[in-house]
Image (cartoon, rainbow, N blue to C red; front, side):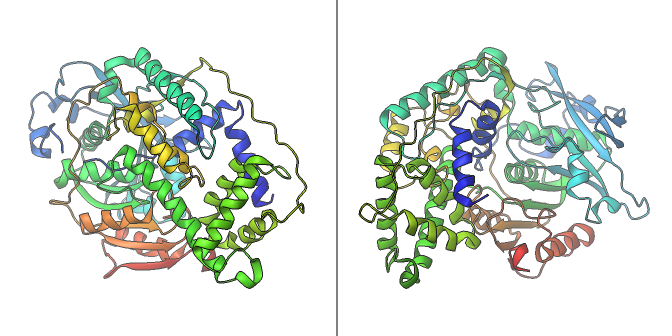
Amino acid sequence: MKTGDHTQELWGMVNSGNSRFRRTVIIGISILGATAGSVLPASAGAAEQSRHLRPFYEQKIRWSPCSFDREVECASVEVPLDYSRPSGERISVAISRQKAADSKARRGVLFYNPGGPGGSGLTNRYGKSAPKEQFKNTPLNAAYDLIGFDPRGIGKSAPLRCENFDLPNITSRPSDKDFDHFATWAEEFEKSCDKHDGQRRKHFNTPNTARDMNVIRAALDERRINYVGYSYGTYIGTVYGSLFPSRLDRSVLDSSVHPDETGYAHMTSKAEAARGFVEEWAGWAAERDNTFRLGSSVSEVMETVEAVSSRLAENPVDGWDRNTFDAFLGFDAEDVAKWQEMAERVAGLKPAGNGLRIRTVPPAPKAAAAREVIEAATYTILAEGEWPQDIETYREQVRANRDRLPYGFGPMGSLPMPPAFRSFTPPEALTDIERDGYPRGIVVQAKRDSQTPYAGGVAMAKRLGNVLISVDDHQHAQYASRNNRCVDEPVTEYLMQGTLPSKPVSCPAASAG
């Protein structure tokens, strides 16, 4: 399938009645930015010395074969819904364990989280054991018990429920009318979540997930844990280390969030990253003006891009309209390997008299509101971040950014998500991200990953004093995922031997060697 065809198919699915895909898209682009100060409890010692929490830490785990993989054990642990009231309501957190293959070489437990928020740590998208599949080509399963878990609110761990109101049609440059439709959707979605789980939702947050992890650790009778987290999972790992520094040993943060950017700011940062990639491509195209004739400078190429986008807004051609064109630029600019195809596509669509065959692309049908009840922890967890509560703030941002940040899913960086209409008050301040008492680790970051922009990984590595492994790639999640020896070997050596690279590491993309 051609790049343009893929982009059109993607936008068509987003703007269709395919509610499952639309939920996947909105969750996929809503990865939480890091948040920051906690009031419960201040330290691991304070939590573990509480007589009210002792029964949770001392509970016995009853293992049985997992339904999805008989070679992996599954169980559940009980945790307080509200850690400030441990004698109150309890919930169950589902966990899995694949025992270390070499008992003589075993060095402890390795916790795993794939990201989200909303991702299951028990099973992957194919219904297989998530940590087992993630690390099957590494020696980690020889030395570690691999521990997967569904964070609270997700999967088999007291899942939160909302009613599914299908997204309104998404346009690359939202008008005021588009904004109103989206804001209505976001508000109704939040109301439906509140209807199903109400004030319980405020306890489904990252600090409590970290506290749940510490209960799991203690119930496993382990002094410390090791940790590999991806995307939002990097935030869970840093919150755990910040709250329980004496309980964290080796840690790997892959595709890290920024330690100082909260929910809405993180969304905007992703939109800014997408524009940066398009401008980087524009510089490349400008150096090849004799070939593509798009302009001899970044500004000239961007003017050509805007001319094409404006023309397609009025007269779609060959299945391309403004939405598909703007999305195509943002998606493909991340991947250097697609830059030539991008330039050829833009050159082919460049206005040139009557040289293009024009046809009308009918607008996508407006999605009807559904009432299917779905799992929806994502927006509840995102709500712990900083989101302006004045709807006019978002309207102003959309107006300011509609023509500057239209690429990929950039428009979503300005629109109000359900947390903008949050129906509860977070019960505690946000966790100060710091490394105070646990060993240095590794941050792995791709330079052109718009989901977790490179600057976030750089900032996280600096904040924690971790070694940064930079990858000249656009793919989200690198370690044990891309068959890239430059990444996999130093990370695996660190997790197995405890040896950190002596300096920052720069890696090519896997396809580049």
